[in-house]
Every structure is written in C-alpha cells, then in structure tokens.
Image 1 (cartoon, rainbow, N blue to C red):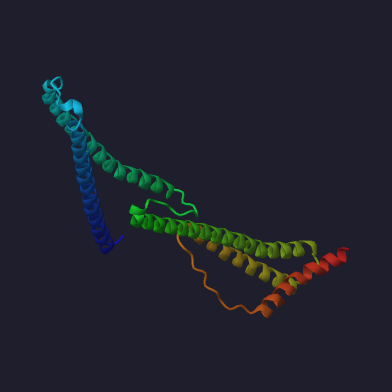
Image 2: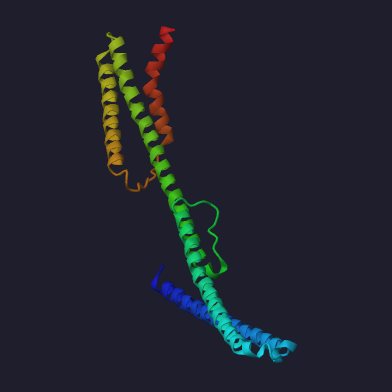
Length: 246
C-alpha cells in the first residue's frame, strides 16, 4: 500500500469516526429525551391520581420526588453506559473479524475474505493480498515444476551420449578384427560423445548451483535433418550387430 492510498484510507477512517461519534451522540440525546418524556408522563399520571392529594399520601410526596429523581439519574447513567459499551464493543468485534481474516491469509483459499460493510476497504485490501499470495504460490509451483522438468530432460540427455559411448566401446570389444580406420572413427565418435557428456554434466552443475534463481531458456535453431542422419549413423552399426546375432 503506497502513501497516497494510506492517506486516503486514513481520511476515510476519520470520516467514519465522525459519523460514529455523531450517531452515538444522536442515540444518547434521543435516549435522554425519551427517558425525560417517560418520567414526565409518569409524573402526570401520579399527580393526577386520586390518592395524590389525600391526607394520607401528603407525607410521602417528598420521598416520591426523591425516588423519581434518583430513578431518573440511575436509568440515565445505566442507559448511557450500555449504549457506550455497545459502541465500544463494535470496533473490538471488527478487530476480531480482521484478525480472523488475517489468519486465513496464511493459507489462502479461493473463497474471498468477507467482513462487515463498515470494513469494506479493509476487506478489499485483504482480498488483494489474498489474490497476490495465491498468484505467488502458483508461480512458485510452476517454477518448481519447470526446474523438475528441466532436470528430467537433462537426465535423458545425459543418458543418450553415454549410451553411444558404451555402444561403440562394446562394438570395439566384440569385433577384434575391425580395421584401424573404423577403430579410429569409432573412438573419435565415442570421444565426441564423451565430451558432449562432460558439457551436459557441467550444465547440470550450473543448474544445481543456480537452482534458487530463475533460469531463462534460450531457444536455438537445430538442423533436424542433420540430427536424424547423425542418430541413424551412430546406431546403424549397433543395429547391424544385433541383426547378425539374431
């Protein structure tokens, strides 16, 4: 969240605080006016009663006034305290809701974060964080999968030249009467494949060393016809040898 967004959020919080303060004041004033009207009506009912002016009730009038005044202040204080308590409890409940939503961000799901309407801005911010976290986790899994795929391909590439080297060495071992020209040719091919194997092993070490970094594969043009011709030539002698054995 940048400074401009934080400033706008603080301004919105101040507006919300002013609205809540005005709402609280309105409720308290309404409560006090309602309480005054209730006691006023009660006073009218009591003073209009037939027993109010009787000689028996006259000594109790001062006590009645004291009781009514005391009851008014007790109800007024109790009501104001309860209203203030409810208003103070509301932000604490909001805080609990935000804390619960923040805990969900540790293992975010596809379900969005839901908060009360008064916390709409915080809900949007938490959902933004949730989406970014899910995207980061997805990107991390994809990067790990790409690395694993790359290692699998590299392992396959390591096996190919090694198979060629072993094949040519086995051919030289099984054919003692082979000409010096073919011996030189086969050993040259085996050496080239061994050098290719060394290059792949070095690449493997590079990938292992930079496994924590993002590797960018650079595609290069390959002469497919030449590659197929080379593969056919390399395995031709091995195929002929197998056919003779059959």
